[in-house]
Length: 482
Image 1 (tube, rainbow, N blue to C red):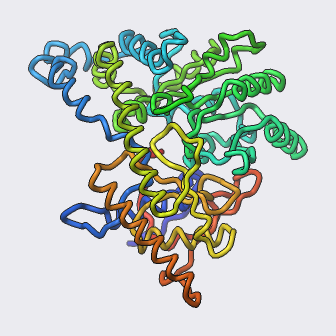
Image 2: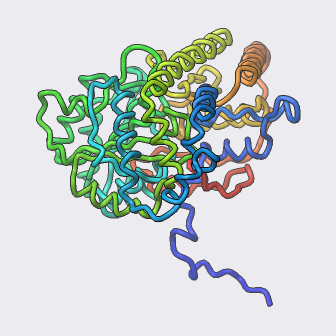
Image 3: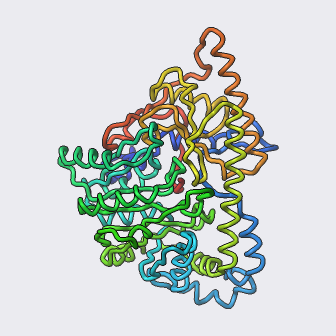
């Protein structure tokens, strides 16, 4: 007997597509997974440049692990600790873990601020941390303001299961996408006109995808804004240690120490070890809140996504080694800066410009507007299809980050070895030169054809995932990726 699945038997979440997988951002991942580049086995495959991952310092991690085998309970040296780590631990987390993370967060911020270990709440990566904080701060139908362009995963992390809304705060490439109070006020007023209650503002500092940091005065104005409106401020600082050149990173925690009026109960920080340490697979996410009620509630919710005690034990041992931590932070910045210089030099040789104010992150905000047939989202998507299917590079189109101006693409540069980077640059240069030659001849349509959903940019992205099906076959995508 054959049974036909009745969607009414499932919940709206299970039968819907609110995960946001139907996005060009994730389509690029599917294209890569279908044809991944390998230097010998598949040299003509798609190179992964959509993964914001720091793989430049694994040799430092491996050296530390060799010298500290006891840090892992799965070695002969660590075997004596196995029983105590394997048995039940409550959701507060190991005290040594919270102490080490608080210490590391301070070191990343130049020891200009200190963090209270008792305010550290763990979560399964920044993905789980963002959802938890959304559950704590807003009810379904209420909203957060989010400056654009912003990480596409926020549409999943903050909206999918919580039912809250995200209201874009427009930014302009003419001022390097700087967050302005005028734009914040306008978005807030528009929400009120639409009878939407704004519960908070979410900022990413350093920015994903821009690779920029917020200056002190901008941060101060943001703190004044949320205090005046009596709304929450959630600061995603997961790229704090990836700032590789001046000016230095400034945490919201530094601003709160200054002479500024602010209700501390409104401020919350999301952090993780996925970017700064290159540990996305360990799923170490952190909520640091100045609000006692939020700490208490988030800690209870963390039981749905705890960090394993084995991971806590290892991380606590590593981050408690102050000499190693300082060396790692210093060397990571140096290697990121070197990779950035080589990559931007290669792009410059191809005539491609990037956002000049970037000095952080694991990616570049690349301007390909000069290659567009016209300055539209449709033209951006057509160019993106060519880059994916002909140039064989998975870069992420700006519209998937809700960027209003067409032609911007995020390209990640720290998730590959030097050889792969040079192959990618060679492909880019060849493509750009070919396009330049084509413009000198009678115009012809691009070879790759096919239908592709287009991402519109409404003021509120409730219909973000309701566009037509992608031409790239879908596969389950459950891993958290930035």
